[in-house]
Picture 1 (cartoon, rainbow, N blue to C red):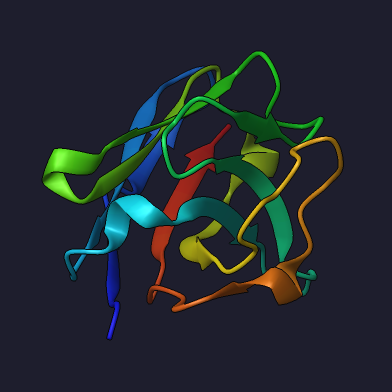
Picture 2: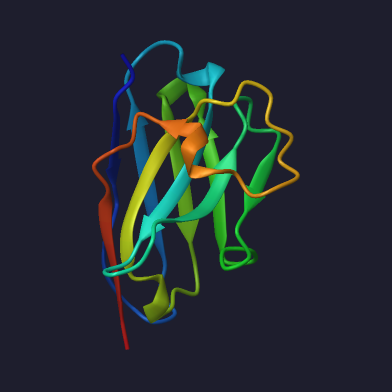
Length: 128
């Protein structure tokens, strides 16, 4: 069974940067797309970014475009989320998840219901 563990969160000032990591168990990691979601206190969980199994396709939420970059290193069973120009509204628990859709087009916002094997999350707090 696939297990995901996020890391890299922390406290940063507005305008700062963080790189989140999601380490996965299992040899089949490279066969699946991956996604990042976040949830702020009192808010619904929202999609942030997704990447295809090979890394050739990506999709970003409007709030992430131009600031966040999703990437993966299949040989290391790891997916990353590089976050720049962070704002207080980026404060949330960030989760990675396995994309269960076999042939996603990446032409529309991925649906939360299409993902599974959710990690425990890593806290990102942006001050000021």
